[in-house]
Structures are given as C-alpha cells and as structure tokens.
Length: 81
Image (cartoon, rainbow, N blue to C red; front, side):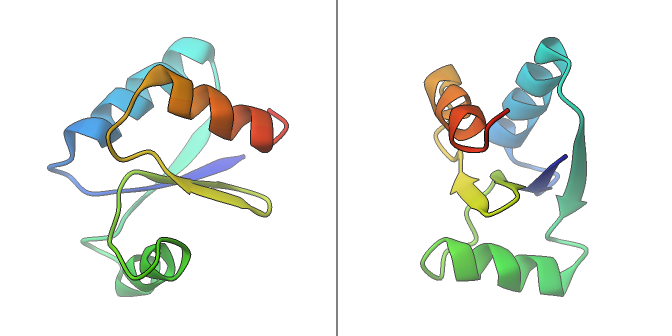
C-alpha cells in the first residue's frame, strides 16, 4: 500500500492521484494541512521541506513535486510495485 502525503491545493497531488487511479494502484491519502505529525514526517524525509506529493511504500519515500510520469514510474520501481 502506498501512503501519499498531500495538500488540498496541490496540482501535482491531483495529477499523481489520477495517475495511480489509472494504473489501478491503491493508496491512502494523508493531508498534511490537517495532520501536523504527517507534515513533520514529510519534512523529515524531504530535507526540511513540506514537499508534496510525497509517496511512501515500505522503506521508500519520495517527493513527486514537479510531477512527471517518469517520477512516478521510478518511485513504483524502487518500491517494487
């Protein structure tokens, strides 16, 4: 299962959600505007930046800010999905 950290206003977040849905890949969305601990986690894996969307699967965490399909494919490959 992929956990995706997002904000409500993020266009890249919406693009990644569409791409995952198109691929039939399930994910859990966590809005960092509503969960301070989630925001702190995102900053901890992104060098102190609140970079969204950040996808996590197992030990693999990656920001897909500046979304391109190749970034998603690289994350999925690294996560073994």
